Image 1 (tube, rainbow, N blue to C red):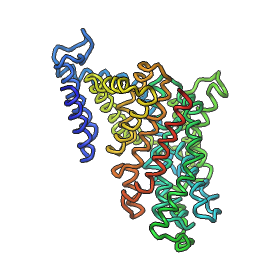
Image 2: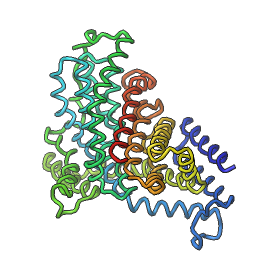
Image 3: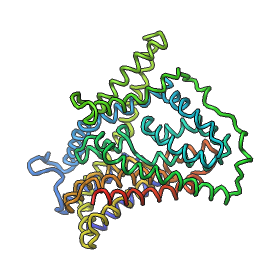
Image 4: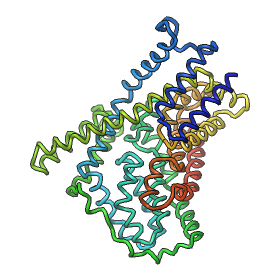
Length: 456
């Protein structure tokens, strides 16, 4: 009975996501149903004994209030500060300046397929500093995409190469990395540099070559000849309305420099965290912007973009995170997570087996929903549970789960980034998915193998 109800609820959630119903409302309703079912069936109380309100319906919303208080106090300000700075840097033209400066060497590459490897690594580098898969891809579609087309790279290959690196949620500015590090009580810079970077180096050593082989195979199958387009397209992007001086290109790097510079690896006497780094960055950038524009009033007007970015992230990602965690609490109360772990133990899968199962499950969830954040937010509580039940390093489960979410989004035809770039490139989302599928499946295999080798 319990399993049937859980499967029905999860199935309805997946169906609602496919129908593009509001994800926050969907997850909240599912969480309400699971928590109420758990209490009525005597599986688990909604609130601890003595903490109830006296009415089950009110207890459900008290549970949501408790989750909101805990989550916002831990990662709320972090995510809000990241989004605000990212939006502000795009508004003043700093992100565009960084792309313009770093894209110039690409123009010198003559072999279109050799360019793919360089381009993929280049986009990955940008994604560390310009967070947000859709926003970065939009930026690159107006700047590097014409450059790649001019070099003789097909539309489908160019778009796939832009999208693929956005599957790798790497760096202290990535929300999934922040949430993951918080879940296991690890400093985000320590997590990124000492753990995630090893997996990422493996991906960067292999996937560019996989991408070359796969895209060349697909181009030949489509009958595409690079010589037909070489020199046909003019480089674009320098007419962006927010033209900024070249030195603005260094602004997106400031948070990373601060986080790395004031860490245990460099200067340990000064403590630095993400909100401090982001607010320091915005302070420096506003001073530079005011001096450049010779107007404090204009610099203050540009600060409105920071406010808009913080509001946007609260209204989208943070509310989604809270709804997803509420849904996760319902799954936990109903016994779904412990049931999966018990099933894995009964099947003698062991820590490696269950890590693979949960990673593939989250990849599937990201594929269905088109979101890389929602599955991580919903299922991140399983990481400490896996570590406790199997006595293993939580990083063995955490790293594949974080990568699986981004990879699942990148092969999803309903993902915002896929739909957006497909429309701009005048191809279908399925065309994009066909080109990203093999590099992405290779990525998850490499992540799982590397994580197992590192932490078993």
